[in-house]
Amino acid sequence: QVQLVESGGGLVQAGGSLRLSCAASRSIFSINFMSWYRQAPGKQRELVAIITSSGSTNYADSVKGRFTISRDNAKKTVYLQMNSLKPEDTAVYYCRVVGANEYWGQGTQVTVSS
Image 1 (cartoon, rainbow, N blue to C red):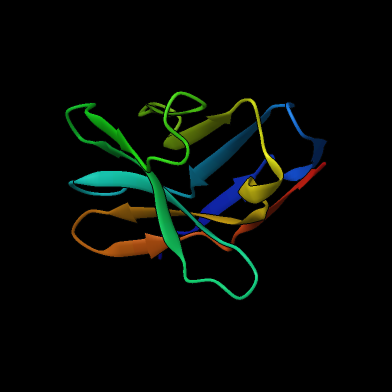
Image 2 (cartoon, rainbow, N blue to C red):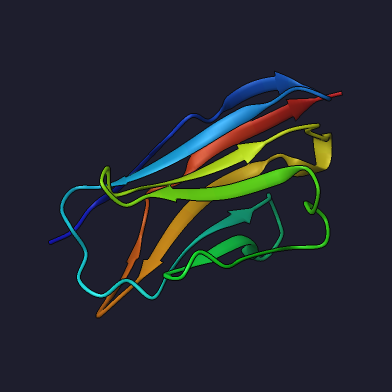
């Protein structure tokens, strides 16, 4: 069973930066894409960023120009660099990996104070 372990969340002031990491416990066969989602209190989970097996990326409009998704295949890790953070970015962030199966991380809290 593959586990995804997220880290890097925390409390930061508006305008600050955080880097989230999501490491897989073992290699995942035939990964199609890796992505980050977030869920704020009282809101639905939403897609933040996605990176395909070929390296193509896409972002939610609300984070374009501020967030960057990347991956390190050798480390079996996907990252989310978050800059110019805003209070509305406050949420629990989850990574999701889709290959032959689908995997979700346990979530990491990001809190941005104004």
